[in-house]
Amino acid sequence: MNQKYCLELFDENDNLNLYTIRLKDEKLTEFEKFLEKFPDDCEYKEDIDIIIRWIEKITEKGALSRYFKPEGKYGDGVGAIPIETNNIRLYCLRLSDKILILGNGGIKDADTWQESPTLRPFVELLIDTSRFINTRRQKGNIQLNDKTIVGNLNFVR
Image (tube, rainbow, N blue to C red; front, side, top):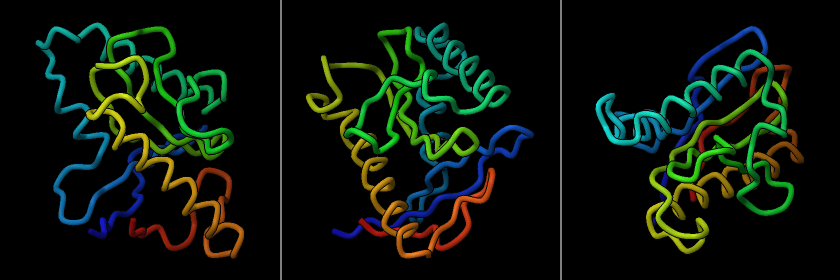
């Protein structure tokens, strides 16, 4: 089954732009789906607050590699925030200090994302996205211009 999706700008800021993924025919983006899992009164409110504070810090300072726990394959830019909690994972794709793609995530229910049937699809989507972007960049079909991704941002996996 082919899964079509696109990248879209989520939030534009002075120091960086946040992008996210929207699967074809889905109302919510992957990041919005993540937030919907954890309403304000949920038991993971403290963890979500930490994630939101990290996103605010990253928005202010830039998507520096030290803010992420590497989660994908070496060099693909896939990571998790926050780096200090063990309960919740939000997976992201860091393209540069000025471009971050927010993915999805959830409750950590295994020692690694590879062992989690819940979290594995979120990380694999970001790994594939990284590979697609890098291939298109090599071919000149996508460029990273400061805080912006320019080019064909529609993908099929």
